[in-house]
Amino acid sequence: MAPKTVLITGCSSGIGLALAVRLARDKQRRFRVIATMRDTGRSAALAAAAGPALGTTLHIKQLDVCDEGSIRACVDSIPGRHIDVLVSNAGVGMVGPLECQSLAAMQSLMDTNFFGLVRLVKEVLPDMKRRRGGHIVVISSIMGLQGIVFNDIYAASKFAVEGFCESLVVQARRFNVAISLVEPGPVTTEFETKLYEEAERADYSQTDPETAEIFTQLYLRNSRDVFASLGQTPEDIAEVTKDQGL
Ligand code: NDP
Image (cartoon, rainbow, N blue to C red; front, side, top):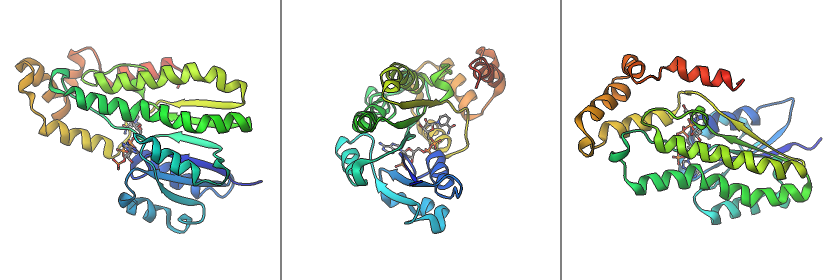
């Protein structure tokens, strides 16, 4: 059987990088992995992790989910534009009191996490429908199921992702195209590091001292007691996942 072509976004680090390498090295189910990233200058970690798979079962290409032109160019570079599996993984985070975040930063997050997915699906779904086959796998988050304190905009972006997919699945299924949502809990990647660095640099003068203190305790001192006093513990969050049968 011909190897399945899998296109993954956001492969410069974290989940995307690990998934690309795992699939490219799978000897039983054969995959041709198109591992994409917005800045191929950040490909060293993926290239090192891929080893001999690089250039054989794993190919690195540029794709910025915020740029329709770059998505089209990447898909056009694949023979017959034939993608069996699209993994929409690229994403960014944001934590902090709402009043300390600029609208421009919120819009930019929505542009990546939500409209990034929309742009990808608009480009790839028509080919999958024409071929009557394909699979779109979307990395959402536990925060697509449950809002978590100080993650207002990030959670909203993942709720948007979930609503989009749940609506789309109905027409896609008719054409034998599957849509899957993956809702991970915390995973140790650069994602968290970037958030904590931003949180440390942020200016909390826009909020009241009490909110600033709660946020600092929670995110910069990682206090479980404060989480509990707000009525959300990591156990509460795990409970949501269990309820969803995940
Ligand atoms: P990382 O920060 O390690 O990876 C995010 C990836 O997305 C990076 O490769 C980044 O590229 C890329 N990216 C950001 N913006 C764009 C863009 N405009 N176009 C293309 N790529 C872009 O985080 P994770 O691996 O943890 O995150 C992957 C996904 O998993 C995200 O959707 C996140 O929301 C989700 N998730 C993560 C969880 C966690 O705890 N880590 C938990 C639940 C869900 P660059 O290097 O250029 O910045």
